Figure 1 (cartoon, rainbow, N blue to C red):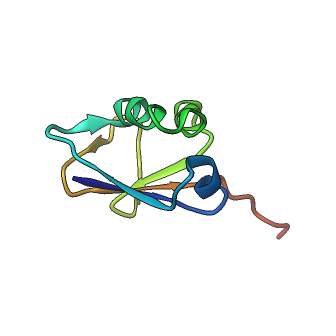
Figure 2 (tube, rainbow, N blue to C red; figure 1 turned 135 degrees about the horizontal axis):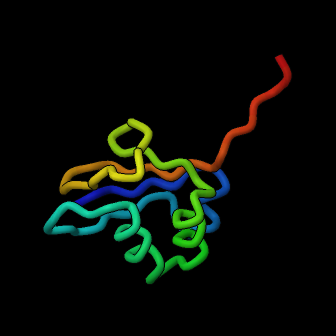
Length: 84
């Protein structure tokens, strides 16, 4: 089972704050977006278009990151910085 967490404005897009998914084999971010699309097509589209930041176990992901049973996946909106 993996835990998905949605932060800030992504909560309203996903329609939830958190959910759990059962997976039997490691999956990619693209495969995860296919699963998310079943209940939240807009959220899946944002993941595919890389409009959100994704962390797995509190580490920012790379394109080839595999998600495994027991992982926590967090979706964060892009952050913008202020003037220095």
